[in-house]
Amino acid sequence: MTERPLADNIAKLLERVRLGAEKSQRNSGDIRVLAVSKTRPASDIRAAYECGLRDFGESYLQEALPKISELTDLDIRWHFIGPIQSNKTRQIAEHFDWVHSVDRARVAKRLNDQRPLQMPALQVCLQVNISGEESKSGATVEELPALVREVLSLPRLCLRGLMAIPAATNDPEAQRRAFAQLRSSLEQLQLFAPGMDTLSMGMSGDLEAAIHEGATIVRTGSALFGARNR
Ligand SMILES: *Cc1c(COP(=O)(O)O)cnc(C)c1O
Image (cartoon, rainbow, N blue to C red; front, top):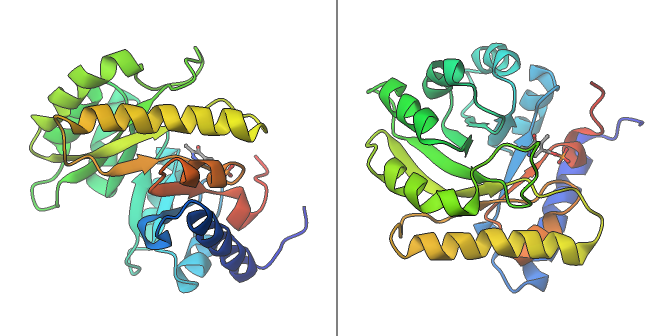
């Protein structure tokens, strides 16, 4: 794919978010764009930052750490959005502001115990396997209440909401159904965890459907940086 200028892509994406919010009678200020910078060099992140983006998401710890240390002069909020291996929790707890992919109590407990005391509490979303795909990580909807109670008891974690990556589909109705399911799970949990205010859902291909169903963070990679060549 030919490289389109980043500033253009960012402007187009923000316009998609604005229009999506307007169509759903939502305030676009309530929807945060998380720039997913996996596979992209630190120079791309710096360029996107200079265009005004502040939130960046990484999926692979070994790839993220050198970029984070190269960009310490910038006021970036780093979000970890990839699968979490237990032996990686310390570095996640030490280097990230948000984690979207907590899906079991053991990982939550380790992140809590390893979060440095001089840092603010780690902002946490629980990843939900909303489409019930065997290959995907994420807690089941049934596991959520117990997991929420566990995370609420951990003082170094601040439980913010839910994250999902539904099965990929081009059917807007199916996209909406999956996102609506996540929203309804959040609404049930809010009855005893009123601090949960975040729905991390929607990517480059389905962010309109996600915004329609209440997304407060959309995670976009290819719409900003172009297709990934792995
Ligand atoms: C890669 C990735 C994204 C971004 O996907 P795009 O389709 O490039 O926007 C969002 N969320 C997660 C968890 C990802 O791994």
